[in-house]
Structures are given as structure tokens and as C-alpha cells.
Length: 197
Image 1 (cartoon, rainbow, N blue to C red):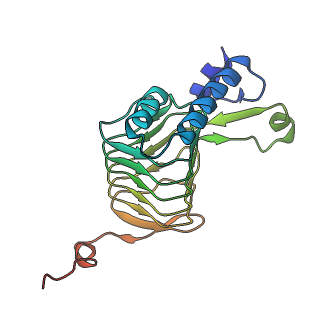
Image 2 (image 1 turned 180 degrees about the vertical axis):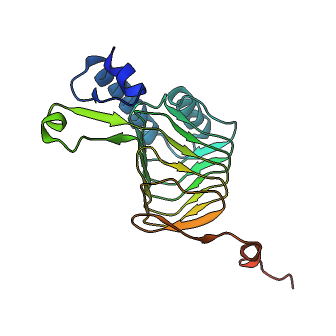
Image 3 (image 1 turned 90 degrees about the horizontal axis):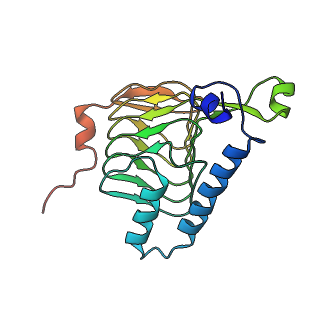
């Protein structure tokens, strides 16, 4: 079994010394570097580069530079995906975003984890567990999502949260560790409307 196959199956794999994975990450980092050097006005060039990098994209998306990922091919985004500056996706495993996902600045989605045992960790071994995000999810600034987490649809993750467990549909969740604060209700629809004069 290759190190890539181990990675894809959620087993411990050699992330630091395997030639195939090192080359794949170098190719990805070169594409990210090129992407981050493009002028913001070069929208079609940006879109083309992301389509080349990601495993799947919707028709409409916006990824504000700088952006970094490990492989790119394990990232799938739905329609109307948006991320602000400094998004990092460590995609050793699949990272899937539904439609209408909004990501504020400085967010990290990390499928990668390392063994607690120092001997294994010092050998360059790590694991990768998938992250799945539903539709209509908003991530506040500086959120970190850890390996193996699923986040339901119609949910808001508050700024600064560290998400280390699954979060259900239709809630506001915040904190470190991230916990459900409350359900999103019909009253929330009225909160920001302005009356016409």
C-alpha cells in the first residue's frame, strides 16, 4: 500500500519523507503561490487556477488571496462559495463544502493530525480525517476546524471557535472547544432588517 493510499484510508502515513506526497504538495504550493501573486482584478485567471487546483467547484465562487492548501485535489466546493483572506485548507483527506458557505478571514480547516506518541510523530507519520460542511454555513473570523468534523447546514460558527466535534444543522455554535449556543429561530430573520422610510 502506498503512503497516498494510507492517507486516503485514514491510516498513519509518511507525510514528511514520501516522494510522491512531497511532489504533490510542492506542485500544489506552487499553484497557491502563483494564485496569491495574481492581481485581484484578474478574476477569470483566478477562477481558472482554482478549477485546476480543486477536485470540484461550483460555477460561482470567490477565494480572496492569500489562500493555501496542501493538495487541492481533495477540496470540493459548492455554489456561491466565498472565503476571505488567509484561508488555509490542509486537505490530506477530503474537505467538502456545500452551497452558500461564507468563510471570514484567518480560518483553518485541517484534516491533518499527528500521533501523541513522540516516536511515531518524529518518524513523520500523521493521519488525515475528512471534514464535511453543509449548505448555508457561515464561519466567523479565525475559526479552526479539526480533523473528522462534520458541520450541519444552516449553521453559524462564531469567531475564534475551535471545532473539534460535529455540529448539527440550524444552530449558532461558539467557543474553544466549540459548543452549540442555541438554535437559529424565526426571530433571527428580523434582527437586521431596516424599515423602509
